[in-house]
Length: 473
Image (cartoon, rainbow, N blue to C red):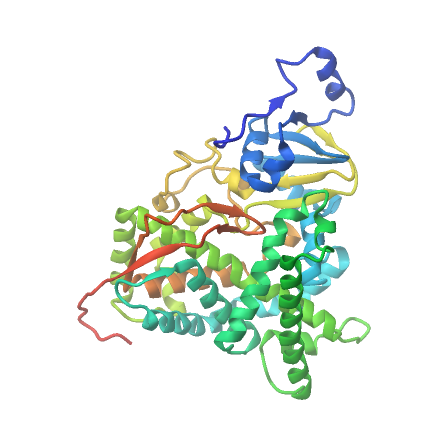
């Protein structure tokens, strides 16, 4: 299975001589090695095509980029070993290492004992009871967005979702309501940093950020502004230290290690920026693709509107409604199957480890891809079809055929937050709006750290008018 514009990779099977195959069959065996043409260009321009071509070689395949070996594992059993049962044999990969330039030693980029310690400090902000308290803010901010929309408007819905989820994460986790200018500045810093991601896996990626290029200078200025915003937030918290606040920065400020030491301003900064970046980006991306898919499938959209009418009757949803919005959740789940915001995970083997019957050497970069697993026809019938009803019946498939939030000790700490936020935003806005895709606007997935729509998502808003027996509350 290959993407248009990229030829299938040649695997070391069949068409090659036995002398070429034998080294891979020697003890210990190594993954089947694929030889792509122009792989470096494809990796930069169309990594999804490269991964799909690698997957066509088998459940475990390998390429070399200079001295660096990359192994792609595609079977759910192997994914489980890498992310869970054998996770101690791996550390984070090159992309997350490079992300430290923006995120520092935050929860996303840290590793080992330090990562576990930081996760324990952040976890209370995402306990079930705490997340339930965020529901009113999520629905309220979605209702504010709803009030600003007008029938017939053509908007970049991706930009709208980014702004909405950023405002929500700052208000819920950091007890801060940002002005429009600050939202724009934070969004720009995050976006520019994500744009750099596509270069981090290339051999010259580290060099690029040291060059005096206009793009790099903009990135540095945006990061400096983001640092100032966050450090000002920390300074204000320290001035009011001792108050009874349950926002995340206050929790981090009050946290103590076993030896009684507190976190430094820099450590708190790293966690805040990490959660701002990760906490709004993934949900915004998921919602952007959801609106697009609904615009292409009017029957699905009609069934969604029917559920919202039946459960909500025109009122703003609450935390109690989340469990009742079964089809709404299925729509979101199916959107994340086809367009998972986190589309790939990268690990580096720190010791020799067996994957799928092959020995992967220490130092090898190992990739697992949600995008590939979620579309694998072995586990999903008609995998390219958008069909939320597949989530309403029991189906026998491997657990790691679907893992939009990762797994193991590095699983997304905010998974429950993301589900609630996505469902409440979708329910609030879809009650009053349906969208049609602007046919002049190209929709292309852009695989960076997240699977964004490359050119945004231009949609025409169409108001839905209904009469309800009870007044909106």
